[in-house]
Amino acid sequence: MLIFSPQIFIYFFVFLIKFPLIFGSDEEERLMVDIFRGYNSLILPMRNSSQPLTVKMGLQLLLLINVDEKDQIMQSNVWLTLKWHDFQLKWNPVNYGGVKDLRVSLDKVWLPDIVLFNNADGNYEVSYMSNVVIQYNGDMLWVPPAIYKSSCIIDVEYFPFDEQICHLIFGSWTYNEKEIKMDFDKSAGIDLLEYGESKIWDVVGAPATLVNQRSRIEYQLRLRRKALFYTVVLIIPTVLMAFLSMAISVLLSIVVFLLLVSKILPPTSSTIPLMAKYLLLTFVLNVITILVTVIIINIYFRSPITHQMPGWVRSVFLK
Image 1: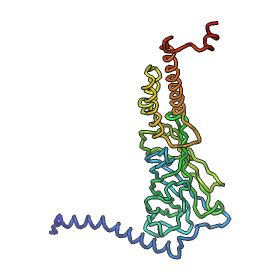
Image 2: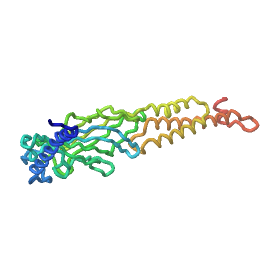
Image 3: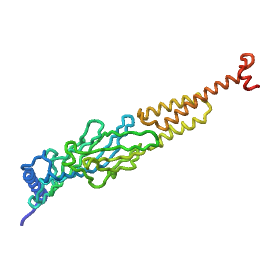
Image 4: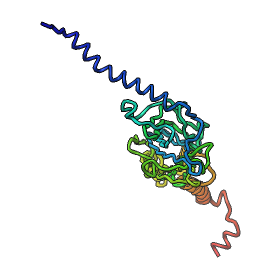
């Protein structure tokens, strides 16, 4: 009579689990050797030189890190999705144990050199070089994460109730429109499904367009400032000061608010914020009020002992 110990069942179970993995690993290794035999990662994968290679791109916004109004720079955390077809990297899954995809390092395959043209810190590339996924039919997928600093022209005329439009312009650095055509992956815009809400800005729109004969993709990020903080701290105290009767105190307060606005906003000369115009006008009117008050008080307290009425005043007002 045969007696089976529990250890035998455990060893047998582990063998059943490990064997397919070892077999699959061997098949992938054989597949890697076969498909990369004679492959050159420096050559653009174009079967026909008259037809450009289509690179589909998607952009997913995860976090709006900062919008620097003074330096006019937007910093964002994004995921890029790049898809293209490489006719040289095809195989039949039946011949390789049912393997339908591979994940390889970037140096093994050709990559589209898609960069951010309007970057503001000299870093044109992505921040992490993730692996490339190769499908058995030759479709390539690369999803690298990146933190970009892009230039953004800030218009502060209607601060703090302003809206800004920041651009992210992507395209190939070395290939022209006859070699690479850009296209949208899924939708013509930035994907906001995983976006973490900013405490300062609301994203009101994120469209995208193909420009320069489809050699570039221009994403727009339309931002609206959340004005509650500035309304409570800046606007309400400024408006209430207009009802105060102490002219000197109001004048000093306006100077403080002008310094506060100049510290928050960039020193641009294209437009002057309406808030700054209001403060400046209030400042000028307050100075005029103080001067007129000084003149009126000086005239009111004059007496015949200290002053004599000028002749032109007597002739104009008394005759």
